[in-house]
Length: 233
Picture 1 (cartoon, rainbow, N blue to C red):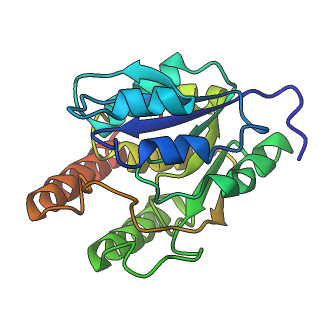
Picture 2 (picture 1 turned 135 degrees about the vertical axis):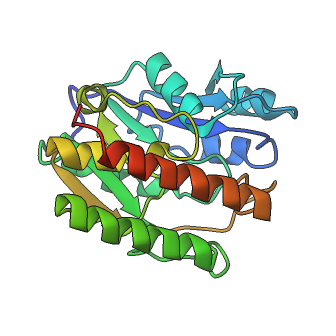
């Protein structure tokens, strides 16, 4: 895959992922990327130290919120293509080329890794997560005539396109807002199948507890209503 003229920055928001983050960083396809940025979102463990020792550049975003961490990483990144992924070991960095290839070829502005279309390790996703992805895809198809099957974290977008989205979401609705704004603007969007594994360690901030799942569901619903009722960026 030709990436001449492109710099790729990987952004990994992380909150208390000391058990897994070093392995995630070491798995990076370094031959394809310029840098790996781990955004420490107020961790109380050794996430920052583990990430830095493994070769990542660490950026602090102490005010917690998934969207805040993603935005901080994007602001710190030097590449013109940004890849977002989680730091729990569930995404497979070796498959990053599948996200980058359509952008490098000039065919897409935004590529999403779909766990629904890829190979999922048994137990890696809850039924509630699968249903939420299906429901969001159904509603966005009604609203924008786009076909999404997932709201997964593993995604790539050009810096120029991300700037045009004017993202506002600071917490769990970041991924959904990105997909909605991209559809509103008519970006060239593609979904590609990606594999998905069980988290390598620690506890999920969303699926790890009933309260976390409820908070995420409410915030995602609020994001859907807000973005759908506002003009395109």
